[in-house]
Image (cartoon, rainbow, N blue to C red; front, side, top):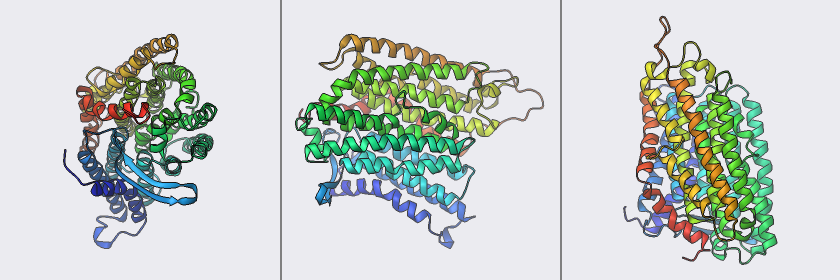
Length: 525
C-alpha cells in the first residue's frame, strides 16, 4: 500500500463523487474540433471512457492509500456544514464496508463505457447516453460515500432518473412499461424510506450516520426504532429487491440494454443492502432485532422463489428469456445477502457484504455474456437458442461458451470462486444467529437456504447444457463470431477478480470484518 496524506485522500474521494457529474456536463457540450476523431458521436463515447477511466484510477489510488491496518476507521473524511438549520452536513468518508463497493462501481461503470464505445446500444444520441451513464455513476458512488442521512437519500434517488431513461430510450422490447414499473416501485419505496430517515434524524437530533451508529440506538425509543426500521426497510427492500417487492426487476433487466442490466445488477441492487448494513443495523438495533426473523423468512422465500422461477424458464418449452432468467437469479442471490444481514452476527453480515461484491462481479459478467449471445443470434430466447440448430457455443464460439459456463458455475457457488464464500458465510451466520433471535427459526432458514443452493446449481447447469452443448454447426449455417478484442478487455477483469476473491477471500474479509465488528458493537470494539 502507499502512503497518501489525508488531504489528498479527501480530494480523491470528493473527485470520485463529483467527477462523473462534471464529466456528464462536459459530455453535453460540443466536442472541440481537434478531438472529434471520425465523428462527434465517437468523440463523446471516447469522453465517457476517459472520465470513467479517470474515476476508476482515482478509486484504485484511494484503495491503495487506505489504511488497511484500521479498516473500521472512517478515512478520507470531509465534514462541511450545508444546511445549518437542519444540521445537514456534506459528510463524506470511506471505511472497510464502503471501499469495496466504491471500487466495484467505478470498475463496472468503466467497463460499461468501454463496451459502449465499441458496441453502442441502438437508440438516440450518444451524448445523452454518456451523460446519463455518468450521472448514474455519480449517484451510486455518492450513496456509498456519504455519511449524512439526507445526503444518502438524495444520492439514493439520484440514480433513478438516469436508469429510467437508459431503459426507456435505449432498451429493447417492452422498454417503456418496464421503465415505468421500475420508477414507480422505487419512488414509492423511497417516499416511505424518507419518512423513516426523517423520523430518526428528528428524534436523535442529528442526521450524521457516524454519530448515530456510535450511539447504537440508545437515543431512540424502541417504538421509534420499530417504525424507522419498517419505513426505511421497505424502501431498501424495493431496491434490493426482496421478495415480494421484486416484480419490477425481471421486466427492467429484460428490457434494459446490456450495460443497463450490468449496472442495475452489479451496482444498483447493492445500494439497498448497503443501506441495511450502514443505517438499520447500527442505528436501530432493537427495531432490527424485532424484524430480523421476518426479514430472514422473506429472504429464504426469495431464494427458493428465484430458483424455481429460473427452473421454469430454463426448461424445454418454457419460452424463457436468458436475460429474464439471470434477473430472477438475482432475486435468489440477494436473498442470501438479506439472510446474512438478518442474522445480525459478524459472520452473517461479512457474508452478506462478500456476496454483494461477488454478485456484482459474476452477474455483471453474465449480463455482458448474455448480451453478446443476443447480439450474435438476434434473440435471448432459450428455446430458440437450444432449438433444432442449437446454440452449441462450445463448438461455434468456444471462448464465448467457456466464459458463459465459467460465469454459470461461479454463480452457482463453486468452491474456489467468489460466489461460494458469501453464501456459505450467510448460512453459517444463520446457523448461529445473534443473541435474542430464535435459533430454531434460523436453523429452519439455514436448511431452506441450503436447499436453495441445490436449486441454483440445477437451473444454471440446465442453462449451460442447453446453450453451450449441442451438435456441430449444420451445413450452410453461417458461423458466429467468437469473443472480440473489446469484449475480452471488458470481461477479463471480472473473470480475474472472481477467481481472486474465490481463492483469496481474506483480501475482502480483512477489510469488512473489523468495520462490521465495530458497527455491530455500536462504535466500540
